[in-house]
Length: 184
Picture (tube, rainbow, N blue to C red):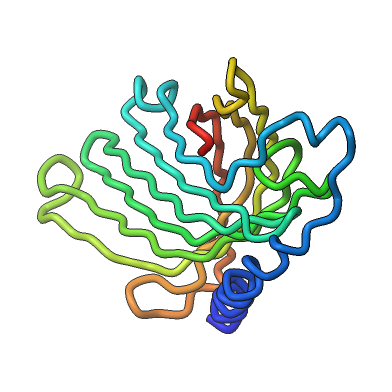
């Protein structure tokens, strides 16, 4: 829980400092001057949606090299259901937030459920707190250079579930990202 609070605090600090740092951005070069600098990207994953796994993200530039975002996902697989929402912070080492290679950290909540019937005599559900990391690559393309294509992956770890500290159980699972979005 301490780690998720630390991530949340760091994310809020980035959000507060971001507009000031953005106004002082002097990292432009002749190559980057010709490309638009968008402030945010909204994206979804049509490939995963075909498989019944729905995701959506919004990512906003707060400095020339960092972003904050909010993401959510949901799917149902037979009697099992999964929903998540995460606050994310990403760092782009090349100094061009929203484009290129990025490393991220996240903190959020999950909800797992199982319908009654079959293996289960009755339905059940529970909520938990997760933290995660990811690596992503985003390319801006198109006539206006505002079509965002992203691919990446990472790991999430469950820290609390159903009101219990489960961090010692090391419940970790992989994540994947293959999305298309609009930068504006």
